[in-house]
Image (cartoon, rainbow, N blue to C red; front, side, top):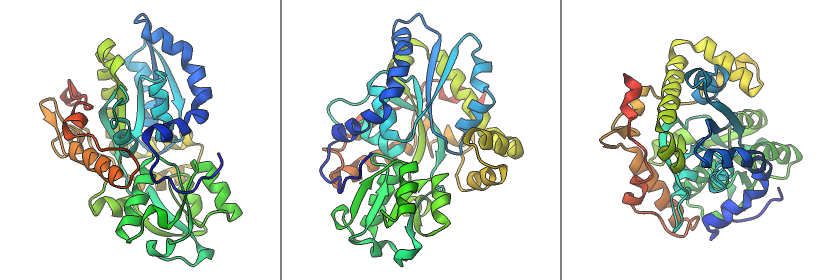
Length: 352
């Protein structure tokens, strides 16, 4: 993917279209499954995930969903960014997927919101997403980035947090050179010296830290009032067609969150196997994330209950407002519009 400069003024449609090439193979590969699911006679579930330390990888590695739904064919599809996930949902190639709160806010904005709803919280961003500058630049704070080249995956939680960090430091997006790169190309550009800094997530983040200086993290930005989360969304079509499958998936996700606390060694092994890293690295990466308990997810402090949304509604609405102020989307959706993009029915059943 060739670098571009500033994204100021780009619409959500352009940002999503930019991801099309990156997911073309995935969408094509899922097309037959999509048609089968749409017919209503299929028992297929197409699930998008990231190679990022979370309970989602435990669900996949331990085949918790396959055990809960033995009559289904579960297809796990790996993605690199939220923009790609959004494009796949537009192409009707996914039923369920991990998605950052920022790309979700983009997805429900505009005159044609993506037909999906948030149904679970995977994790809260902590030290596992951060802004790092190459040590040889001599940059030690965010303000020092003025005029510098900064890479981040556009339309991601890292992109949102980067904009928030710049804003807090008194810089506009136009004061730096923003470059749209996925995690692996970020690492290559970093090693070549093509960029001065990057905002990205694990495991690429840890590689940058070896020769970089961390300037801020999503944990710090969240504490300052702009938290980001990894959510899980389900398509409107799946909600109408197969709510029981969603219930089984939620139960599997709840079990994974419990295993992160009750079986840390087993969780480390599962994450290490899925990402292809050592168990010591997996343990260190998991320690940087913030994982809620199922009871916390299903509470007024976070996703909410069957009777109404929790504080996540405000977080997503505020995120969309900030993106609109930054000219990243044309206009922010109303709180009522965001509320309609929450799927809370049956949520409390995971606690039974």
